[in-house]
Image (cartoon, rainbow, N blue to C red):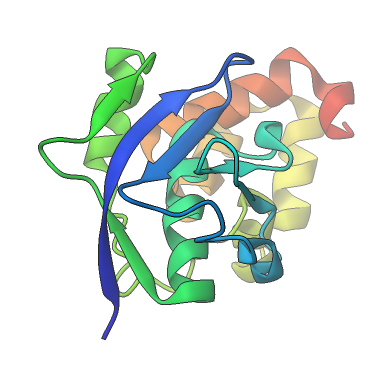
Length: 170
């Protein structure tokens, strides 16, 4: 059985990167979350989870990654509550985060995976890469939806690749 820990704050830091602060977490509460191998880190000074490479994920996917990493490495189920503070999160992003299924114990086999890991697991990575090289937004969106990204994250991901393909290796 997982330990449930409420989320005190979900916000954007000074650089505009998402973080999740568990309620009552000590300075070393999640110090070894990096062992999960997902790129999630613990900032002991700020007492919050953050990403080593925040550009790797769309915002809602990153949020789900925080939840999944805490569960996989520590058996802790982080949960939003009515008292969770939302700091600097735009309304549309908050709505998208709130709409996501984030229970790491019940979300499907793709939970906690990066976009590339999801596409690879589904055998879609080469096809997605070809669509990205063609700048075929509709094909990209279709595959991202099949990879269980939310509509918001699928659009965010496809549009980011199309806007700056060299940044993503295309």
